[in-house]
Length: 171
Image 1 (cartoon, helix red, strand yellow):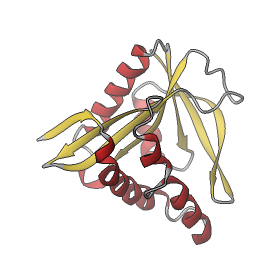
Image 2 (tube, helix red, strand yellow; image 1 turned 135 degrees about the horizontal axis):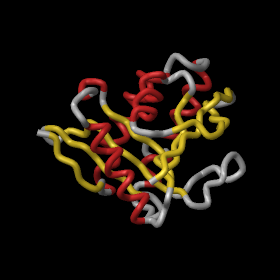
Image 3 (cartoon, one colour; image 1 turned 60 degrees about the horizontal axis):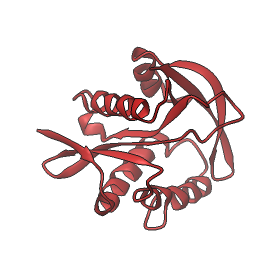
Image 4 (tube, one colour; image 1 turned 90 degrees about the vertical axis):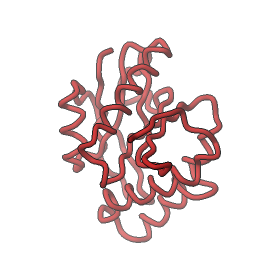
């Protein structure tokens, strides 16, 4: 059985380990090793953004657990981009990661549904996210759920700059 709940600061190391594993499986091939290492140091680990942001009230986290193990999570906040698209009436799904072994089990759908509820509760009329242009699986998932490409975002992996698609879902 999969259990969903708001994440707690104590969940940080388990969420971080799962997210790092998923990130490497999805993006680890996409940049030179030095850039990958630099990004991983900024995003994950004891001093990385994931753990640092977890207790911050500006962020909402939801975790999915199976037999007590973290198998997915979603992270929400105010939009990080302001120049690329009009984000004044939006909230942003910053991350939605699901462990590969749980793809197709409804985890991503449940986390996306939670994200919509959080955005509405924050007064947003749109939900925004970014997705790497080469992540075809994620793009298909978001498009299937009504998201449309509305702009581009320069995502830095170390010194490498990738094109992320900004997608919007009217709420």
